[in-house]
Image 1: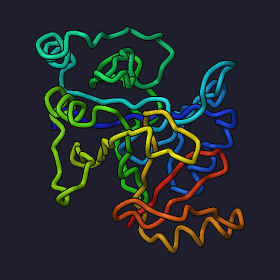
Image 2: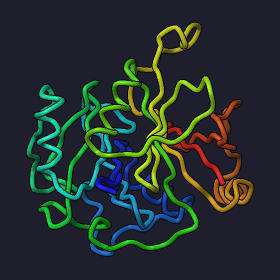
Image 3: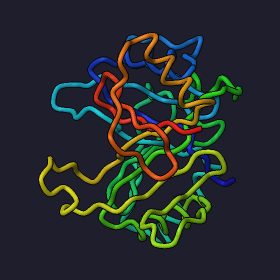
Image 4: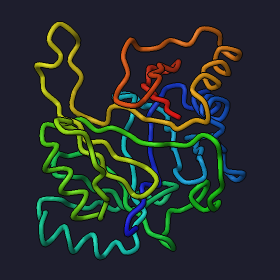
Length: 249
């Protein structure tokens, strides 16, 4: 594949404890050379997950994601040709995944990297490994789902997956991780709190949903669960940091 979804980032006030949660619950690894003074970086052998501390005035939750591409200049050329309103920003040298950040036509921010580029360390340079629990998908809600799906296919060559008739979502994969683009409509929030269009949740594949839940219960007691799931995903959990996680097997 031309592009791989290799990076995700969360902002949390409890970033160090949150890193331990993902290690214990999903068997993610912290890089041997990582130091948790400013952030925590864990990985599943394919995707690196940055957990950054929340600073004053910054919103907690899923912050951004990142692509590793074969050639960033090809991406820039596609921006210039088809999406001239999309711009690229060079970032500080202390970031572990990428020195470049950009956005899609709806303003969702993501990072760009390629092998050999500066600003790559921690789990991003540790190589890949196999694990029985891994990041399966993440979901993005937007007012322009079809246009965004076209953007990620044209620029990053993600592959559109088949879906049932009438399903309004778009499922795009890099061969391992799926980006689910979901429509956002303010009327869906009638009678409840309104959530803005943004990255909504993170999904994990586990060897057994029941085994996963029993493991959580043995460590932390009762596991809160949403009343309804999404598609084929069997369990929707809320971890202790108000961040939505879905599990499937």
